[in-house]
Length: 495
Image (cartoon, rainbow, N blue to C red; front, side, top):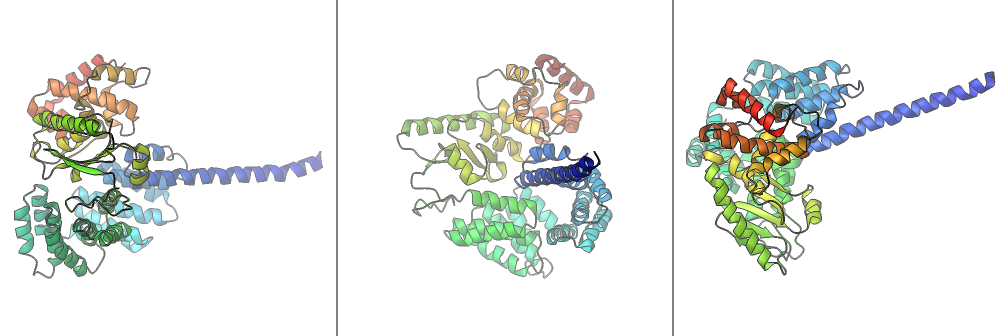
């Protein structure tokens, strides 16, 4: 018996050791997957995966860090601070986790106007010097904190699409040594938006030359310069500059913007069909067709003439019908890339169809997708003359479903979606950023349709432009909001 025990004990120890190793590997893989989703801006999926790691002692610090970063990117700073402070507390070894946490904590404080606390946290990230990238993020955030007031004013004018005023302000600062790099960047950026690509290039090149350290100016200047060069026919140079913006990774948004631009430069073995008005290089079977409101690129029209004509006719009509509500005046036409081959699209674009980037007026769609959904994302974002202030997944997807022009009963679809689910109110879904899309889409569509019918035009506009529950309560008044939610819950059958 003694010898049996002696033989068994090492085996049990080895098995236990192997189980621990496997468990750690699984945890690492899970966090890697969560970071991968975060890098692709799939915030809801990344959060859902990361929340599950909070109670695991070996991954809790990293999980809190990632959640904090996501909430900062979503501008939910108070929530972000809680996770980032927890991450710092849990990181007993003061590792790179602390470096990143202090950097993002500083950004969160800066975004909420707490300048002194922001400076303290950002300087801690720089002093820790744990990774090159976390230090860059901190330095860039510090730079933005101390940027001259005129830069903020010019960028505010840019956001309002008052381009001539913004350029005038920037031109007046070009000879100021302390402001020249920002001035040239702003001028170049506006020229790109105005599609004056030849004019943009020298200003963006000079902005990059004047930057002595890697800041948001260099990251964004490379991004816009890459787009300008491709549109001017210098494709290889443009691709190189877009890749520089991605590699610098100065800001998440400039890197993501560059990835989106690169994603639209598709494989073109023949080198044909390069159109200066649209920088996408498409295969030999792609064709461009102009509508009154939308420029269309079709993957392959062979034997599909009637399908293409019908698609354009339906979408032009839908644009006019939907925009009666949103009254959007776009700075340029929408661009629709219409795919017949979903698998090829996923291979080239690294994501499933369909999706829309309202900022760039660009949609990638399958030929058989709903007519109104994707264009509603752009029209509602730019609706009533200004971009959306605050977006929530529930309302953002809900408005697209509500105006998708499907002739289905939105309420019935919502009732089916929640049947048998442990959900007690529409507020549970509105509050929960990681609810399954099989629930978010139909319930969101039904709720936005309900809002549209129950609210005044001004109330509906206010809720679409600032999609938070707090703003809806403020817009409708506490009592009216409570009544609306109660009535909708009863209509759909929440228990």
